[in-house]
Image 1 (spheres, rainbow over the protein chains, first blue to last red):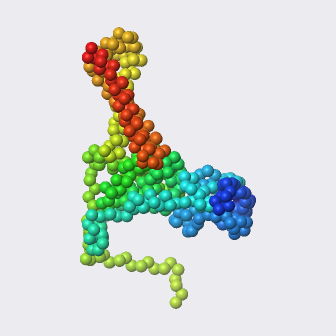
Image 2 (cartoon, helix red, strand yellow):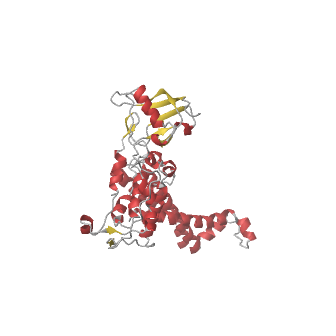
Image 3 (cartoon, rainbow over the protein chains, first blue to last red):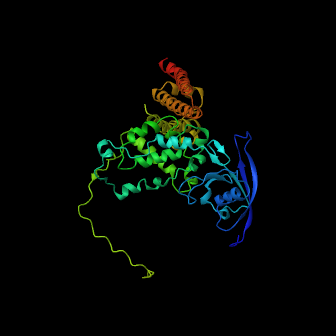
Length: 276
Length: 120
């Protein structure tokens, strides 16, 4: 596809409206695609110019909100993060994410995803409640300690990992890679002391030990996270704790900010001189 | 017992199966190779050899150990597969107890003959 040249791309979009009582079926649309155009822009083109009843989720259009997860040619993607050209196909089959119930067309019910996410208590838990309620200063954390879980803080909760997970496909009660990776993210955080509370939930039926390590979550994550690694690291923490091996993680201490701070670097001069 | 302990036992039993089954398979089917190494198993699959092994405490202990780890590994794995497809708590309890009962029955049936032979 040369620059500024438009190519006709066939979008075969799954339609389903439970209020109409119809079965899910594919509907074809032809979209003039230009270089750099994303699948989301194609869907927006259909909605604005061909069929305004087409339903899909979208918000930021820059892969940070995680709203537009869909199945494109049988592979889960963020529609805003996938250019039509990179798929190298003249026909795109677009379906809602699997392993979730469909609300309408490409919109799936993400309630279970967020329920599992909330269940693992995705926030810093401390035993010193007084400090939590009325913080006196920051919790100190070394750079290396942050690196241990940093990548998992980039999760946008799009649900693509869950839709790719074979265990989530067969076990609707399975916590799923998203929640388990976030569980590791908080358990590995040196500021946190809530591992015991979270362990009660994940160390049970439909919990962490149901992960088959297929690795589909890591392969499909549009943000490049590795939830399968997080799950393996979490398994290691559990086994080490159960058999009494491994280092105990000491919670970060509260550290008052330094009384004296270094002088700030001077603001760089503008490269383009401003008009006076 | 936490599920982590049960899963850890699953890993340990898997490793033990590899060792114990390795001894059994090596003795039964690789006797030609064992002769090269200086170990003469003398027709290990014959009736006399089998009865002779059944009279020795070491072999009986080895086979009972293999039975225990194989039963645990197989039945805990089977329970995991069934539980994955089950959402009802009552069904899960039933599956667990059926598997425990089956495991105990298989263990008793599997140990009765060698122990009877040993004590005869």
